Image (cartoon, rainbow, N blue to C red):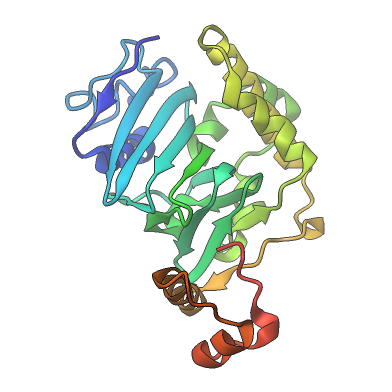
Length: 281
């Protein structure tokens, strides 16, 4: 399958592609969502069937590639590969669009509207509505590889995959289950997550379409069984905490010959010794 790279305004067009699903004519959307998305088809080159689009993200200090697959009407699977410390978005995304992120390598951070910051480590998974994040992603290790599954809840509710329809699962309930009151759900690395996502990183091109369909349905069925009250959440950080850690990091790498004790840094930055648990940032 031939893939074409998109250079200009990639961030804006990707937001339009994700958010513009609701504007597609009902008679055509079951066949090809991307091709009929308003403001996209006349600007962005892609495969003839609109199944795969590769976005080149020009970051301030590096490069990112986001490979978007239209798996089902209203469901996109995105491979994220970044060699940069951050990437900014353009465009506003809807409140009924759910994003599921899995971190394979590196670390990924984003800021919620509440001001809290979440960071994913290797093997972690997060779920949030896409209108709940600021327009910037951070990659503290300047390297990130992961997968996102983006779900338009209203569209999938109207046109659910067969297995989802047969199960009787109401996809609209996922928002209240995982993102009630504007919260973000984070699941630490565990075998169940690894089983679902690990195989997606090495799928032969000839098997992608059927395999992606199976794995997306498996993910949704798995999430239906998750008891959020029993899952140990990764800690959320406030913006001031994140900025302090960044300042300490700059200080430590500015002169590698000079050593600082935890006590010295604690006094300088007014951090209690027992608070030195920000290794996930």
